[in-house]
Length: 80
Length: 409
Image (cartoon, rainbow over all chains, first blue to last red; front, side):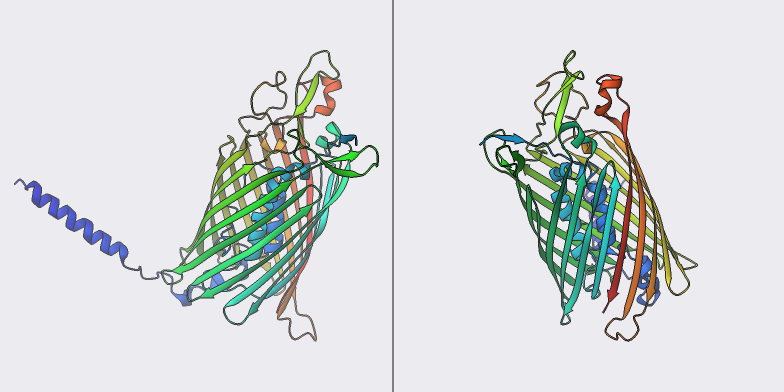
């Protein structure tokens, strides 16, 4: 059986629209708030002691050609 | 007035080409990094003493960081950082005499949270005898998808003024001397754009991603350092000339961090960073960190870091002749090299008896050892023994020490 190009195009468009709608829907958090106790532990911080880690990065960056994107994930400073 | 330029280039001074801005970036991290979208950082104060010793350079000084909430939505921070530098590095020995100087940096910032968003802004100023740098920044963070994801966008702008110091023969005082173009100061502007994402993957794992685009325009060279070029039969077989840098630079850096909570309450972190810029520097950084609490009071840290980079297109340890090409540099920060850093730290948590406004305290110590192996930067001080271009490759060994006290209130 041969499918007409117009029908095929409509089917593809419908599939793409469905996929797009599915993508727009906010995903259900797969790690519930009550399962995140480990992230409240200071040892899970990306930057537990900013004054120390920043100094160490300073030591590296003054001796290397590379710079930027040095971590401190989630920072509100945009300096990451 | 007769002036004799005093080429006081040192490792830290050479960092002046790169470091005021990079230092600024790092300061931004100090001030605002703890802020997550929609969540303000804890009220906290840190007093740190740092010491770097290696390559005949000693740098030490204090750093003080204070954070305090004002109401429910606003957090203010301030940082003072100081470098006291005593330098007799290989660069200084090649061109001039050892020196001492101080750099001070002040910064202040504010974080305001509204719903799932955090807005951050601040200002940083750095001052040393021949380099003044000012930077302002702004960023916004947003928590999304049930707080599993935090997205941060940032922008910064920096304005630097560069001077060249020399000794006034008549008075013996250190004064600003003109650059080759006759001007008394040079200017460098910087812009930075960043995107960060943190993503909780499982109940034990979190992933971080960072991208940063940095652009510089203006005087980007170090006014003190010099290139060397072959001159057979003259002196040690080489002569020196001023460095010539491009007036623009654009770099891209991207990094990923994965942190995992181990079943027995410990944390393992793996990190990788890719870097490339328009000067031809290509670098990779890999780091592994391990954190292990012991009992109720102790937390121990261990880390191993590997870094490697390709040299800049216009770098050479020894150019074939004078005016060999339009841009020429011999800053070893632009040379090809790889380095290893091994570090360890200990933190002791305690309560201060009788001081009720302090909720928690810690005393901390950290030691790191840095080993740098240069692939095309030679010890030019040995040219008399080995001949120009045949000297042994330079190696740097440095010890980095930090001790600091933190209180939460």
